[in-house]
Length: 159
Ligand SMILES: CC(C)(COP(=O)(O)OP(=O)(O)OC[C@H]1O[C@@H](n2cnc3c(N)ncnc32)[C@H](O)[C@@H]1OP(=O)(O)O)[C@@H](O)C(=O)NCCC(=O)NCCS
Picture 1 (cartoon, helix red, strand yellow):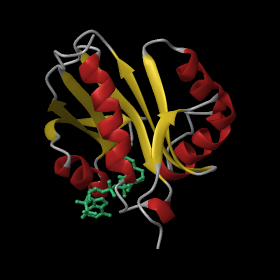
Picture 2 (tube, helix red, strand yellow; picture 1 turned 60 degrees about the horizontal axis):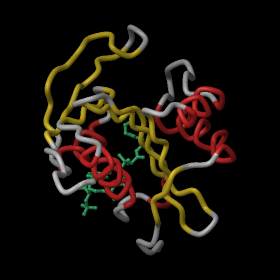
Picture 3 (cartoon, rainbow, N blue to C red; picture 1 turned 90 degrees about the vertical axis):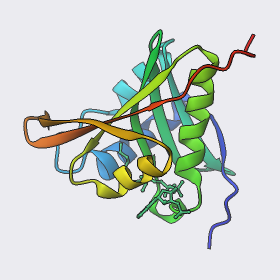
């Protein structure tokens, strides 16, 4: 049994290939692989994007990528390794991004989930996200995309 002892921090370039492979294997399976190592590195260099990782010591337990706009942010990717699931790690990653977004003045967070991924939809519902729309063919013209969002408000105490 893995203890709930992961910490969340910004990823480094040396995490990029592992993040890309986790995206390929845990998120993009059955679709063509779009989040390769170069794309993850590009996201790390993008000033309006945060790539966060959950670490258990030297082990990368999961990651989440969020892109921030003026009033809205989008959670582009999120995955937790199987052995770390149901330990609160996914929740920690999402809440970390939400805190950053709120401090930056973002009101709403959007995300997209594959229609058949009911586990992720249940997970996001538990975190307060609601279904906004369902878009046929959203994923490579193959699969329905479920658009979810949460109004998070703004941290007015932020400096
Ligand atoms: C979705 C995912 C990120 C959840 O990560 P996690 O670390 O297991 O989530 P948490 O432990 O924080 O779970 C929080 C709550 O979500 C719900 N939940 C999580 N996994 C669930 C599951 N398999 N079945 C039902 N509810 C689930 C539960 O209510 C859970 O609370 P509980 O454990 O107290 O019952 C993880 O399953 C995952 O990586 N899946 C593959 C990639 C993916 O689908 N990413 C999202 C789309 S990009």
